[in-house]
Length: 527
Image 1 (cartoon, rainbow, N blue to C red):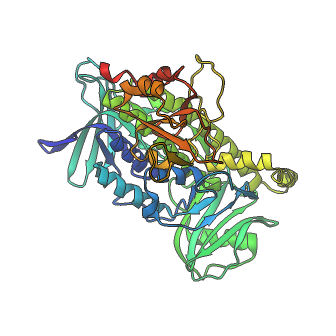
Image 2 (spheres, helix red, strand yellow):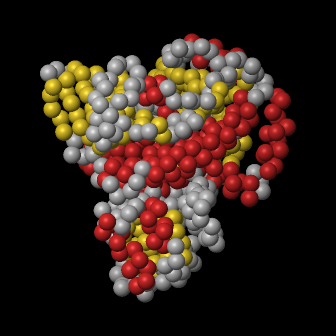
Image 3 (tube, rainbow, N blue to C red):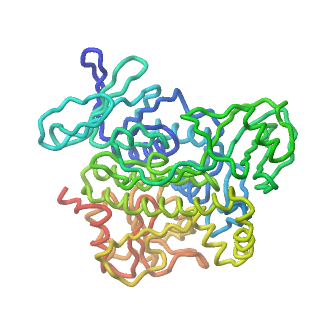
């Protein structure tokens, strides 16, 4: 467990994983680590969840993730909009899912929800703590004291990371086996590690403000002669966003624009005066587009905006980060618990770097369509025609919602007959228990955060049960029948990872032990 003691004036903490950053990605990671049995300390500079109205959209896959951990009851029933956009071109996001469309949830609520769950599970959250330095300690090396403001390698024992932070009551030294940077687009962890972060800086930007006391007609990506204008009013507060064609991104050095800048640009673009309103929050976000070359640097890993910087077009940024954390959490917990080798962490980079690259590419395309001038009108007209084709619409909706993700779960060395569910998320579907009782959803079987071997022939599948028995401490066996007319293949079996993705599919035990070993480590009898 995490230990806390004093050494002169310094508080010393020992834990399995140190998470830097308590935004949605960091808090989701903390919940998954605790669910998987790892001790975790989370440090964050802020005094509490964000009070700024930043991200406000949860996409279908993120809602499914929250459902799979039993979190949606606390969230209630937020407004849902089936229509999204791609570069400002209207796009129906409806796809087969328990939660299709985009759900309007303020980032504050998302953080509060995840913070409560992390606390219930026993995560140690330290607010008002600023990271100063970190040092990776290699196994068997002599002790090398950490220096502030950078990373030095050295270390003791089995290896790990030692970090120094300053908290409200003085210095804190945290010793962890792994550290994960979830500290946003200006990540301190990324700077200390000097991790290569290729890409491009912002050339254009959108100004954004939440304003009370104004009456502005709702605008959904309205392209005018001089720029782009967006406006929506909810509960008496109007959010305006504006870009003036040809206006470059300002050099802000971390400072936000003032309200006068927003009103001036808004007036030049729309002809309307909103200066009489009261600004509640003002910011700017540019079209910077960068991604870490590697999500793992030894015992330091990255998730969320610390791993990738992008314009939050279509509400994808927060969702991408939460899904990074959901992929990493169970894997890192298995490694620190000793049930899996470190090579499992390499699959985190392989899977999520690929998804991140694809998302950043679609955002670059959207930025051109959104912020480009008259020269992009032919492309916009063509896209408007193409999204009327359902195959195109489904492809774009799958990218934005996260429902289209398919991981390479077998690896390049394995070649098998490809099953349509292999590497995809387990569909939310009704099951009929083989031994009677009430129907249940597949999503309910994921609540514990363990793996799942789901036999769909209803006879108990003794050969499958026997094959999986040595992994029974980490993989639950369930024999049910799929409800008629559902998306699950009757008579087959699915091995499902804790994050809900299908890692193996078949009608008999062939290949099952290999998949169990790949994703759930060595046999329990050998642990």
